[in-house]
Length: 284
Image 1 (cartoon, rainbow, N blue to C red):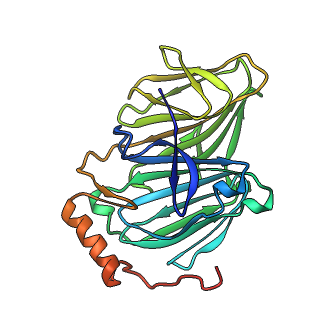
Image 2: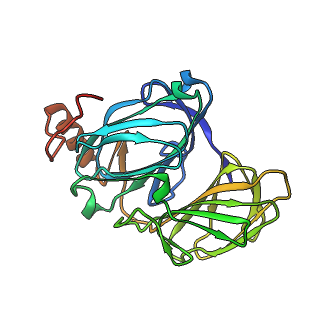
């Protein structure tokens, strides 16, 4: 169990990092989890101007507020509460994500980085975006609500598909004193991140609170109980199939070897990073 730590990224965005390459944890295939969470526009307004990605996938989940985005595939739009985007960086993509905190002064969202296996690292970049209304949601016994972003829960498939690491990404809310049981895939890494309230998890009854991360044992039966309080217990569940390959990581580029990293940044310097038609939106 670990608490997320304050950090600064992008052009000066203040956020909290649950895990990343400086936290010294191996959560293969997951690389990084950040949470933007502020009611002060100065914390997030600088945003994440155009920057590259190669060798990874990213998932952005908007909880509150709005964020504009566009990329070198020509995709552009707005993420609003409940919307998600899933971007496969593959061989190389350049994009930007610009929070719009001036609209209501409040912004909250998550971004997860997922590694790509060697055979997919130089694949064609791909983009998937889904509005809140398109996200499948199921209710169990009037006290458990589950939003299914990817993978399967109770026979319902999420909207994100065709991902090599087979991630199962769920947004779960439990009313006070409600319990949820679920089987952890024996060959998957599973982590939980608290968004609201607190609850007990696992056979040893670990306490999971807002802004804290819990790592579960592979193959263990997941048991979660919301504590008897006035507010519900809301958390994210991330599970994925480990890649078990060498990782060479610098900034937004994650490859298998140091030589591949050098090649990526040489491509950036030489203007050959993008392997597809470059379509930056000039109106952004």
